[in-house]
Image (cartoon, rainbow, N blue to C red):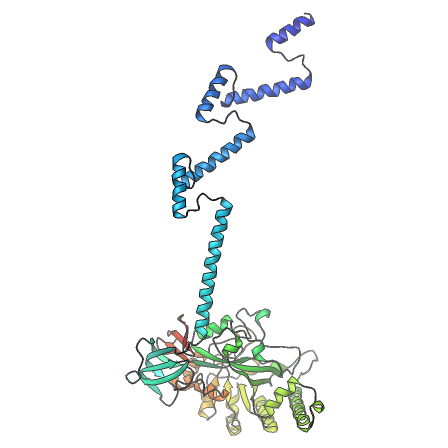
Length: 534
C-alpha cells in the first residue's frame, strides 16, 4: 500500500499512527478525558451533548464549566443552602422579606461574617466589663463598712467571753463596724429593716495567737513561702507586713472557720527571724487588714536555729551569745543617740538596732520559741538580764517550769495541741495548756508553724482537742478569743463581744468544738465576709 493510501485510511478511521509522538499522546489524553466525561454523564459529543447542554441551561447544571469555576459555584451553592437552612440568607422575594425583617429587628444575619463576629466579640467585652465592675463593687462592699450600716446577730447561745458571760436567746447589734448592744434578744432593740443573722451558737471572732498565714501560702512552694529568710541569723528589721499577702487563699480558709484576727509573721528558724503583725482576715490590702503593723520581734532558742557544716550558730551557747551581743549593740546605739547634741553627730541609722531598742524599751515584746526546759530557762534568764517583755512560744516542756514561768509573769503561746511530737517537741502533751492554766499562767493556743504541710493549722480544732484534755469548753474557747487578745495587747478591740469593740463574730450551727458542727457565717467589722459552711 502506498503512502497516500495509508494517509487516506488514517483519515477515514481516525488513526493517529502517523502523527508525531507528542501530538499523538496529546490526542490520546484528550480521548481519555472525553470517555471519562461521557461515562460520568458530564460531557459527550453530538446530539447527546447538545441535549445535555440544553438540560444544563434549564436546570442550572455546572457540568460544562471549567473545574475551578465549577468548584467555586459548588461552594457558593453550599453557602446559600446553609444560609437558607439557618434562615440568614435566601433568594428572591423571601430574601427581600428577610432583609426587611432584619432592618426592623436589628438582625445581624446578613452582615459579613467578619463584621458579625466582631460585633459578637464587642458584646462579650462589654458584658465582661460590666461583670468585672460588679465584682469589684461587691468586693469593695465586703471589706468596707458603709456609713450607718447596721447588722444584728441572734443566737440561741452567745458566748460573749466578757462580763456578760453566756447569754441564752441573745442578740448582738453592730453599727458602723462596732458593737452597739449585746444582751438577751428581748432587751436588744433592733431597728426595723436591719439585716439579721441567726445561729445556734455565736462566739467572738477567733484569734490565732501565732501563725505564719499570709507569709506562707497554700501551694507550699518557693514563690509563696516568705515566712523564713535564711541568709543571716539576726534579722529583726524584717517586717511581716512587707511579706503578708491579704489575698492568700489560706486566709480565706481560716476565716471560714470563724478566725477573724491573726498574729502572724516570720517563722522560728533563725536566732532572730523578724517581726510579727496583727491583722484581720479580710481586706484587699495590708493597710485595710492591719491592726498592729509591728506587734513583736520573734527569736528562736532551739535546735531549729542551729546550722550545720561548721556554720554559725552551731550550738545553744552560740545562739544565746549572738542574741545577747545584738541586744548590747542596740543599747549602745540608743546611748549614742541620746548623747548626740547635734543631728550630724548621730550614728548612722540602723533598722536592726532601732527594732531592738523598742524591745529594750518594752514597747514591743520579744517572742522566743523554745521547747526544752533548759531553753525555756535560758529565755527567762535573758528577759531578766535585759528587762524585756518576754512571751514564750511553743514551750513544749513548760509544764516542768510552771513555778518559774509564773514568778516571772510570762505568758505562753502554747504549741498546737495536735503538734507532732518529735525532736525537741518529743515531750509535748495534749494537756500542756490545761497544766499551765491550772498553774495560773496566761495561755493562748496557736496555729503554729511546721516546716512541712500543714504550715497553717485551724485553732478551732486545736482548742477543741484541748477541751478534751483538761480544759473546760469555756477555758478552751478563752484560749482562742479573749486570752490571746490580752497577751497581745489588743483586748480593747477584739476578743470578746462587748459594747464598743470591733464587730467580729463567728456563727455556728452547733457546739463549736463538735466535729459535726459547721461555721455558717463569719462577721468582721460588722460585715458578713463568710457564707460557705465549713
